[in-house]
Length: 121
Image 1 (spheres, rainbow, N blue to C red):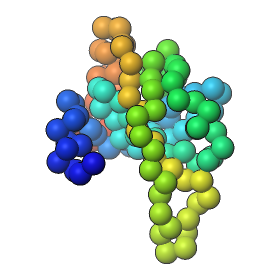
Image 2 (cartoon, helix red, strand yellow):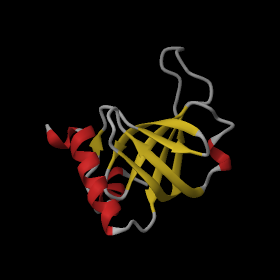
Image 3 (cartoon, rainbow, N blue to C red):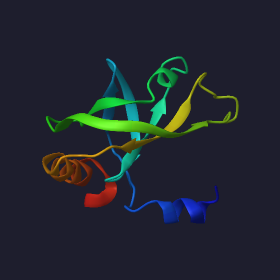
Image 4 (cartoon, rainbow, N blue to C red):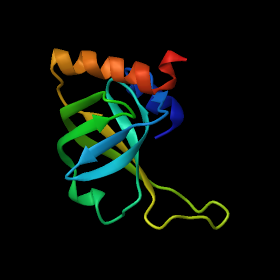
């Protein structure tokens, strides 16, 4: 899929995240960017994420702001290439699409994005 097609598919802008983690099945993964539709994560354990294709997760920031019970599905996966020999084994970037959120979750997610991303800059 080319970049233009990907941009057309997205209904909401994505924002780089200063710090956030997504908790799934007792494991934290780093959030790279996010929107009201979903987020991108870095998975450093190649043996973990394939087991989790759909479910519910929790989103945590560097303060006491969090969201629990977020329905999601794995939308895509990209294995990151070597960077001058500094490859971390199993490092992958995954696209996570949110399922149906309650109005309260939507409102809290919008605030979470504003606090933890470049949206507020």
